[in-house]
Length: 468
Image 1 (cartoon, rainbow, N blue to C red):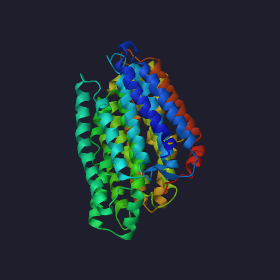
Image 2 (cartoon, helix red, strand yellow; image 1 turned 30 degrees about the horizontal axis):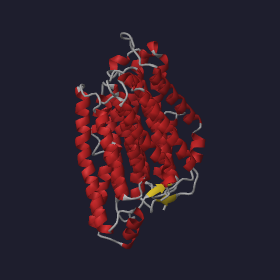
Image 3 (cartoon, helix red, strand yellow; image 1 turned 90 degrees about the vertical axis):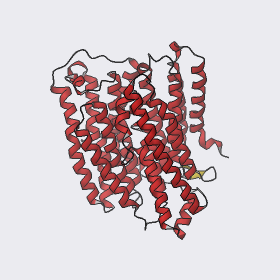
Image 4 (tube, rainbow, N blue to C red; image 1 turned 45 degrees about the vertical axis):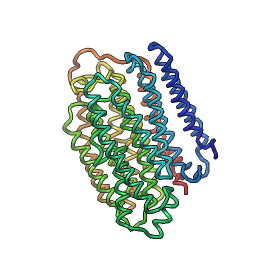
C-alpha cells in the first residue's frame, strides 16, 4: 500500500486527533492554541499536496483513490478555505468555555471533503460525504444557546439525512448493476450496456445526494439558514469548502456515464433552477448573511454549468476549477468581513460603514463585485470561462440564462455597496481582534493577486484532467 500517497490526509487526521487530546487536558484560557495546531496541520498537509502537483495522473490504493491534477487542485483549495476559517475563529470563539474540539471538527470535515474530491469509488464517496456531514452538524450548532443556530443546524441535519440516504440508495443500486463500486469497473459495465432504468434511478439518487453538499436545488434550503444562524466562520466554511469537494466528485462520476443518458440536460435544468432561485430569493433579503447564503445557492448554479459540459471538451475542468478559486476567495472574503465586524448581519448595521471601517468596507465591496463578475476581478474571468465552455459545447441557451441571472444579481450586490457608501452611519462599529484582521487582509490580497495573475492560473490548470 503506497501510504505516502495519502500523506496530506494522514497529516490532517493526526492533527485532528492531536487537537482532541490537547483540548481535553487544557484549560479554557489555552484553548485558542488549538487553532495554532490546526494551522500547522493544514500547512503541512498543503505542503505535501504541493509536492503531489505536476505528477502524472494515476489511481492508487487498488484504483479507489484518484491522484490527479483535479484532485490535488481541489485539495489545495479546500485546505486554504479551512485555513482561512481557522484563522477567523479564535477571536470569535474566545468566550466559548471549551472550543478546542471545534478545530478538530473542522479538520475532520475537511478530510471528508478531500475524500469526496479524490474518490474513484462510490463507497469512498459515501464515506467522504458522511464524514464531512457528521463533523459539520455540531459546527453549525456550536452556539447551543442561540436559537437561530439550533434551527439552522436542525434544518441542515434533516435535509442532510434525506440527501445522504438517497446517495446511499443510489450507490446500492449501482452496486447491484455493476457488482462493484469501483468507477473503472462501473464505466466498463456501462459501456457494455446495462438496465437503463435502474441506472437512471441510481444516477438520480447520487446526483440528488451531491446537490446537498453543493447547496443546489432541490437540496439547497439549509444554505441561507446556516449562513445566517451558524457561527460566522462556520458559515464561511460551509458555504465554500463542501462545494469544492462535491463539484469535483459530481464531475468525476458523471464522466463515467454513457452518452445516451440525458444527464447533461438534467444537470443544465438543475443549474438554471439553482441560479434563478438563489438570485430571486436574494433580491428580497434585508440580512447580509442570509443574502450571502442565497448568493451561495446561485453560485452553485454557475458551477453546474461546467459540470454540464465536462464530457464535451478538455476546457471544462480548468473552467470549473478556476471558477471555484474565484468563488472561494470572494465568498471567504465577504464572510471574513462579517466575522471581523462581530457578525453584523442586518442591513442597517452596514449604513455608512465606509466612514468608520474603510478597509473592511473596501474588502466587502471587492468581494461582492467579484461575486457578481465585474472586471478586472477574478470572478469576472471565472464566469467568462464558464460562459465560453458552455457556448462551445452547444449550450448557448444556458449561457444566456446565466447572463440574465448575472444582471439580476447585480441589483442586490450593488444595494449592499450603496448602503455602506451613501447611508448615514449608525453607532459605533466594534471589531474582533488581530486573528480575524489578518485573515481578512490575507484573503483580500490573495483575491487581488488571483485577479492580476489569472492568466498564470489558467496556464497552470490547463493540462489537468481525471486519472483513469
